[in-house]
Length: 260
Image (cartoon, rainbow, N blue to C red):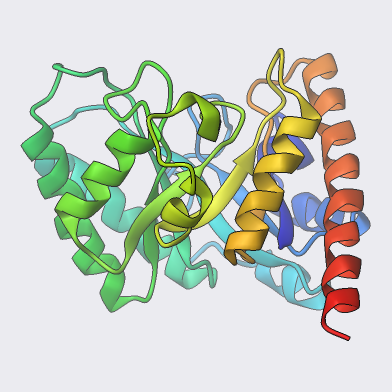
């Protein structure tokens, strides 16, 4: 598995992407994600394919921009949402990122599910032309609030360039109405794992989820993200990152041992 951090964690309250690259390099990360969550200083209004000078530093430090993270659909008119998503896909392509991670910012019943499916299906077709994927992250208090609802949406869109972003802090396998081999079920949909420091989160439970996904064959990005900018919150996220790096290194050692 490859470890990355979001800009919200690397450079809280800042939009200096050069600084984010340096922070990622200092932590020996595989990549960084540009956060587009509502709390982030970044938004599509300030990101454009012509504004990518920071990539020179990223390439020099071997840091990949692996994701645009937390782009939120708020239930605007479908054409406006499609245009918004296409801008994100174009920017993602320009910086060499292969993923735009989406959230749904409205609750069930506030928007017809057919409208959401149409917006994402058309945008996924556009993304496929640029070899970029869209990933849906189920969130509490969202129209897509569970693994099962996310998988239903992915199946209905039926695109090879639309998949799942999974956060074990919000959706543990044991709490979902999923089969006993849940990790193997979602692996075929999974594009990225996100870890956030949440109150009551058990690091051992998180490691257990990662181990199940690892055994199921998931070897892509694990993104550490902190939402909000309270010092204690960010400190907890930094500690989680350090612990996760050690854990992933142990998994790598285990793989080398078992392959001998």
